[in-house]
Length: 144
Image (cartoon, rainbow, N blue to C red; front, side, top):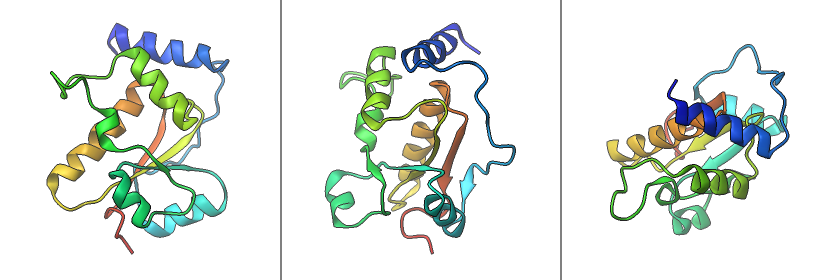
């Protein structure tokens, strides 16, 4: 694991006062079927992050989901493919109330393969920040 990732995960844990004894569910699927996600939502066991643009989110979204458009996970305008700085990533996670203890499901539009690339980038960004229970809604926001 690169030093930057370790220091970011450590800094994130320290910022939220988390110890190293976090319990992680034994079984966690990285692709969730709509029924699985619904069960987790009903049980209050997952935070849903919707990465669609605000207008699409406002037009309809999964109950209780948080809107964090993909653009907010990208690097600076001069190099959008770059990883967010540690400070910017910490700010993004704190604004969503996410900690390494959260289980997170990411939803997306699914209009084309670029959309899946966006959700994969958010997945790996969360992983690099120390979150371990991260999933993607299998079949995008329109999945049934």
